[in-house]
Length: 400
Image 1 (cartoon, rainbow, N blue to C red):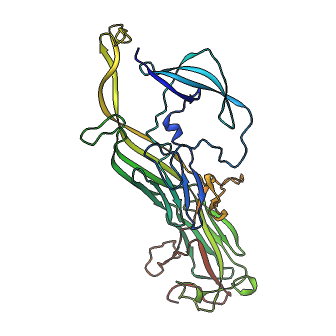
Image 2 (image 1 turned 90 degrees about the vertical axis):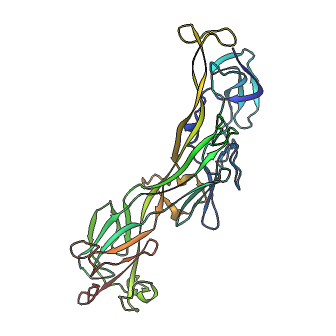
Image 3 (image 1 turned 90 degrees about the horizontal axis):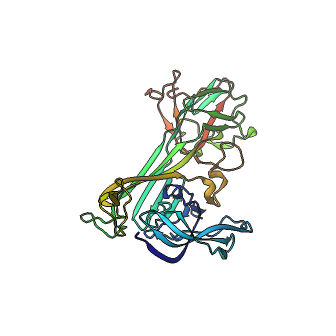
C-alpha cells in the first residue's frame, strides 16, 4: 500500500470539515475611520492583504477561552489510496494549544488531509460604504463590488400636502443588487492554461449579492413608524401644519430639489430605509485527477476493485466545477456604527444592513409614477422632507 510519512505532527480534529463548510465562515472585520469596513480571513497560499491572509486560530472574539482540553489526533502517516490516517489520540489544552497527553496506542481512521490551496473565504480585504460593498482578493487580483440598490417610496401629494388630507405612501420596490469579478486562470498547482496541473483553477468568478430581508421602514414626524412590504401602500394624514413650533425647523430653500415650494416654508423631516442581507458566492473549475479501476494489482500486489481483478488508480484528468458561498452578517463587523445595523427580528443582534438609497417618486391620483405632468423623483440618502399646509392652502401639485 502506497503511503506518505507525515512526521509534521499535524493536528486534525476527529470530524474533518470539508472546504465547502469552512468557506462559509464569517470573516473577521472591523469598522474603519473612513466609513469602510475591512475584513480578513484565511486566504491560503494565494491570499494576502493589509491584515494578513493566513488562517487565524487565535481567540479573537474578545472573550476568554473555556478552560479545559479536547480530544484531537496526531497524524503520523497518511494512506492516500484508502484515504485513511495512522494517528495517535492526544489531549490538547483549549487555550494554549499545548499537547497535554499522548495516548500511545495508535489507530487507523478515515481522514482527508486539509487542502490548503483554496481559501476559507475569497476576501482578503472587504469594505462596506454607503454606496456599496467591495470584496477583493489581493493574491488573485480579483475584486467584486455590489452597490446598495435604489429602494422606492412613492408619494402623493408631494412635496406638500394639506392638514388632514389623505396622503399616500407606497413601497415602490426593493430590488436585489449583484456585482461580480473574476480571473481566467490561477496556477495553484504550478501549471498554465495550455499545460494545466492538478490543483489549478480556471474561470474563477466572485459574486456579491444584496437581497431584501424585510419590509421598508418609514418614520414621519407626528405620523409615526410605518412598515411597508413590497408594493404595499398606506394612507396617512397630518393633524397640524409643518411649523417650527411642532419641530419643522428645516426650510425648503435649504434643501436641493424643492424649488416648487417657497424658500421660507418649513418642512417636516423623516426617514426611510430597508434591511438587506449580503451573500457571497465563489465559482471556479479545478483541474483534478480522475480515479477509476485499472486492470491488475497495484504496486503492492493488492487488488481492490473489479471483483478482485484490478486496483484503483488515476485514469485521467478533467476540469470539475466547484462553488461555495455564504452570508456575511454585520455581527461579524467590529465597531460598525449602530446606524448601519438592522436588527429585523428585534433579538438584540444585528442581522442585516440598512439600505438608505431611498428614492421618492411622485405619483398621480391613479397611483402612476409615469404621468408626465406629475413625474419627478428625489433622493436625499434616506431623508424624507415633507411640507404640510393649512387646510385652506394650496396642495403641492405641479403647475398649480
